[in-house]
Length: 265
Picture 1 (cartoon, rainbow, N blue to C red):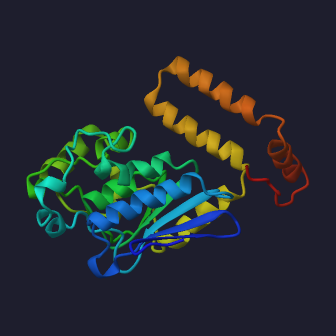
Picture 2: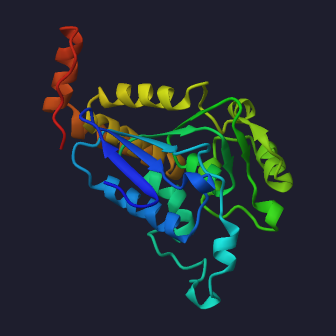
């Protein structure tokens, strides 16, 4: 499946390759790109056989952030209030980052080249980020007199130390992929981020798909819910997978030292 701005290819192992596809503009975000990313996220939520997602950018960069010229040219009458929740808990701009957390399977972002502003907030929506050491990154909004408002603050909780995040936001200082690992904005640093991301996705795709989806739901609950609610959520998710065919297959495959043969819901 593809559009002009985002492509999706689902492999036989259940790993979907999703690409931001505006390489001539370093995948900068214009209205068409916003629509395409949101559409891709919605497709992934109901895709049969999906077990993991690898998110990357075509061309020289992951995403250069907002294409300011495309928005300044838009008539004011076409814009909805930012406070209007058009996509569940988010507005349209926030949804391009939040959609990856709403994806039912793990999303691994492979970041190379430039990753500025909205691009960094999109990458932050992934469950795991693999970044090239020489990537150029920044929380860029303050450069334009704006605040980060594409889901970043909701996604950076627990990732970045508070004073470090404040400095990066207040100064819009550029930093490298190596710095991102130190700050908590990257999970891994790799000279081949796409290769590393695919290795992780393949490993995830070889696990019980029902348990993987349950674990992702628990990861979200851990951030949002109280301790008592998390304990109950753990019990609910475990009861849903325990002794079911995929869980039995995981045990048998481990004991017999063979690759598992899971059934996708």
